[in-house]
Length: 193
Image 1 (cartoon, rainbow, N blue to C red):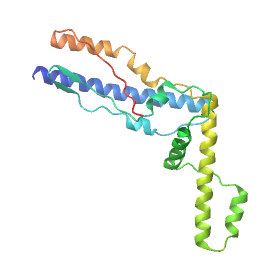
Image 2: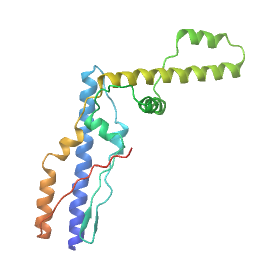
Image 3: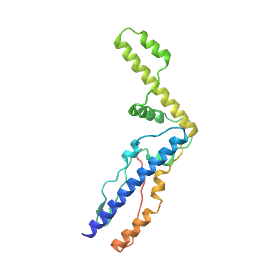
Image 4: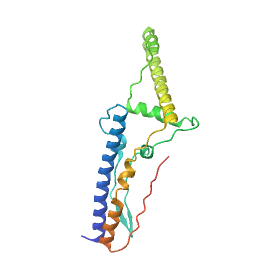
């Protein structure tokens, strides 16, 4: 086994453990957050499912190892402070999309339900129902956005704790021992907006 293969194997093992530990940390933090609010978080989140590490690349003395996850990981990890102004509406729009993709049930007011039942034409009733559901989603997203603007989101530090547990120093030692050369490890947090 050549040196490049040994380095690649070491990095792949590191990445595999990093993915496992990041997922564990995220799940623990989400469970703690849910139980502190009286809820019970069951299952795995989409963020948990998105945590992945493609195989490491070693090319011309440069080693590239990546850990990828959904773009909102930074908001979950670092939290979000309350805001002074209401914002540009992007949070509310994102929450509307989130409510729709998660299939969260929104309640339509009793008055609207009664109005829907009184309509005779099936097509009109269907379109009216759709309009009221969309309005209910908007209202739910608005309320959630107001809460986030007012109270913020508490950070979980699920990734920071995994990254700062000494594994980077251990990786540096292992690579130095393997190659017999000093290494510099640079960590970049890229957040796509």
